[in-house]
Image (cartoon, rainbow, N blue to C red; front, side, top):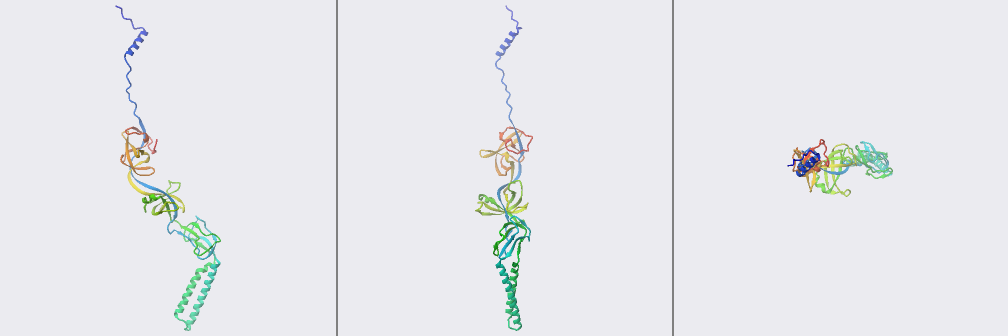
Length: 359
């Protein structure tokens, strides 16, 4: 019997190990599952609040009804000087225009003076005849009435013989200058248009299809054009026209100003008419994702995203009323929601103050 050879030879030992490994089959597969994806999100609580839907319109500051006056020429006159300009503020009693009487006006003054003297002479004659018993009481009364009328007429026109200053009846702003220096104006001709101070309103223009939403008494916020963050003044709808303006092709909405900063006559402003107000569940607009003509949002529960299909009610630029789905106090995702799927694991960002859309 031949004794077995020793395996102390390194080469033989290595061959044996390789053969043993080959006979043992393929290595066991790695059964470790890939890590579950985690989305980084930011969330804010769903809250109950009142949302006001506003209709944005634009318009102009105008004089309120009865707040525009037009001082006029009391007699035929020539305009010597115009002392004001359009847009100029004036105080009560401030001179606006200087006039001098026309030749025709001076003739009327002379005629009134002559008529006064004639009435005085007539009354004296009647009184002398009465002392002789040659006149009746009715004749005396008629002469006295004629003198009274002549005096009234003379006092009316006597000032025409001097250069006259037409003054402002109240404080306000000159909105138009109608007189020109050197012009001959007939009696009653307006000289300037004056909007009385503090008596302004706003004429807004609304699209014809929106007039059914606008009602008298609705609150209006007025902002300076180009500065939507400002709040210039506030007021309420006074009236809504039911005719389209031929100039703007819009419907005039008149707003009575009830408070706020000073308005400039003719200034263009933005008006936000509060056409509807409602209490409901409110979320930031960035929480909503459009999906097949509807909307979806995600809330958080036990570290996972929960999808909700919702309807929307009233909305503003930043907030939306949602109907169905979450309840007050739920955390709704406002950043990172575009990558979420239902039941996906999430991690809340340390910065939860952002309320943007896409991360």
